[in-house]
Image (cartoon, rainbow, N blue to C red; front, side):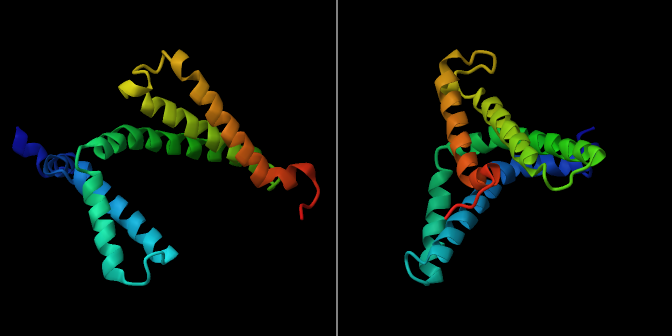
Length: 168
């Protein structure tokens, strides 16, 4: 019966998981690409692609050494996928009631709420966060701090639009 699933998409994805594609290869490629892109764009170490690639390769491999990154991606990205699905459904509902461009701040609020839910849900599985989604008493100061930081960022980004005046 095991051979039956080997040619299915689920069987292929399971084979990739068994080979470590999701746990090691894809996180490595993501870290490598981001580090290389930052080094190449900022030109902090010059324009030598070999140096940038060597540093990005080193950072990517060292990041995977103890499994923290693998576990982080394993916890965070499935909830991120669910958050994107919720945002898509919100887009559909907003399309039903119409959007004349004046309600664009609603997308920011919806996105922030989804972002916070994804983070809290993902981190609830980590023992250092509290270990339980339903036991957030110890995390309330961190949540309040995050909300305040996001509120300040929203005021900085959208402040002149909300106040109606121009900032100079």
